[in-house]
Length: 142
Image 1 (tube, one colour):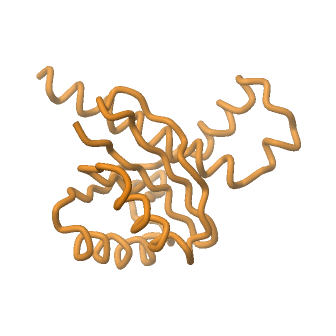
Image 2 (image 1 turned 120 degrees about the vertical axis):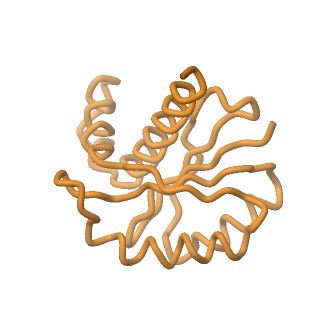
């Protein structure tokens, strides 16, 4: 099986997470400056088998698109054009930053490390991917 890659797209930085080849477990991959993201993905996708790219879909609590969606839509369209052999899906990312901070607290990560926004982005990408995997498991069991 091929991996699933998750992207928590940000204006300055982007968090990435990836599954193991069996698509069982999500783990943090990297934090990349957004301006370097497409080059990073090109290199990564040449080295690893990835079948699906999941991009965090930023919504407000009322369900409307957030401000960042105006940057994500063109990015997703470019991904679909550059990698037509890969599924590119949007997945709701509401509350992932809050969950990432809570995860860091629960893990006993120190205050200075919790202020590392890149770490928050990478954990957020991991949460998006783990939620995506869980939703697929639920859908497949119905």
